[in-house]
Length: 107
Length: 385
Image 1: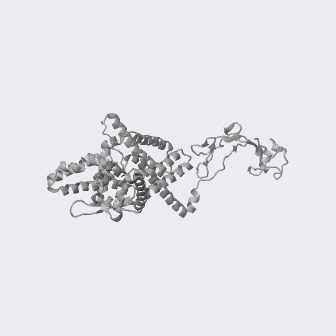
Image 2 (image 1 turned 90 degrees about the vertical axis):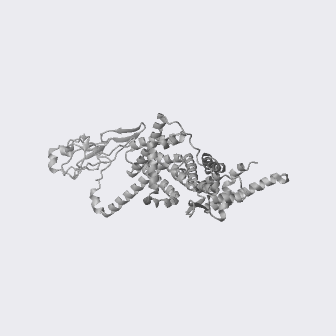
Image 3 (image 1 turned 135 degrees about the vertical axis):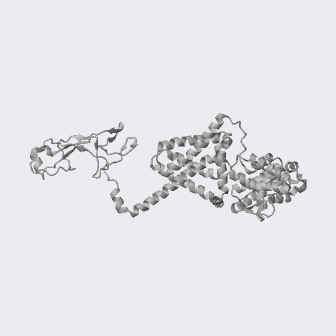
């Protein structure tokens, strides 16, 4: 099964989740997602998702100057972001549970 | 990274920026800060093994990268490049300038407190047509973006945004949602004004108040909403100016209350009937006070208020009966008797002040009355209807 199709629906949740414990800049978020096992996630999709979550008011951002290379824009969860994470997390868990039950021992 | 690699990365970034160029400049800036830095970082990681082919292999073509980013960010799809003919150019120009005119008109309408209705309606219709066009026609926004005046304007704005004196404005972006709410409230305030002026514009204004709330967040990613948000801002700022100026004049009025008492226009009754010395009603009489100021009064005909107040009396009478509403010009609803017509009376009668005391019998011959001024009213008023 093509995981990229699955990812589309849950990338918001995944990005919010990796920002829960620690703020991060785009590349950082991408690395954490891949380390977490989401290898198929596209670079541009992560940046696009960050922009969308930011424009929806779920993230705040700040720029950290760096000595070598370009400045980095860090994103952090704000209160609406945390609320969304909690809400979407519950939805995901009940969805995953339902699918697990459907699959039963067969998978 | 060597110079060669630098140039190639720059090309990649330029192509990416080009594929995003129909988005608002601020948003493109944010993306390039973010994703552009990422491209640079990826290129740096490759070190000596960097080639443009390797970069494209890793990230996709700049167009594909931009496309994927757009899809994930929920931006509207890019407009296909249309051949620039004469007609699209004209249409684009109309759309752009109707936005400018609509914004200025909205500002002027609110700031003047609802002046020049006809012009406002006319310009408002043009601007509304432009707005509809830009929302209905997919390619139009891109065509507007290619207009030389748009390119020049965007350049000026970009430079202004980066200039030192305006840089402090950037942190104010945090307060944008508050401004969107305030803007809607200001528009509603102007709407209340238009409602009190019985102007049909009130409907447009109420619609704009609703749309402006949507336009705030939307126009960050979709430029078409500028056609809503800019006129909204014009109207709101105009309304703000109006509120400030009326507050200032109110304060001034409070302080100079004794003086302003004299400058207040004298009040007049709803209607005035004038008769000559023979008791004949006069029509088309213009009244002035001791300073030569016309004694204007408002008049409400069958169709509501007249276009302007004037000082010509008597006003037509408005009668509502089974035939509907009628305006009867000039004729008073009563006749009077002037006692001064008798020479014997003129020496003894007091100044002919009209008395409201009615007499049941019309007597055209006041001389028939006893010569005592006390017992006979100097003027008899007889209702005729």
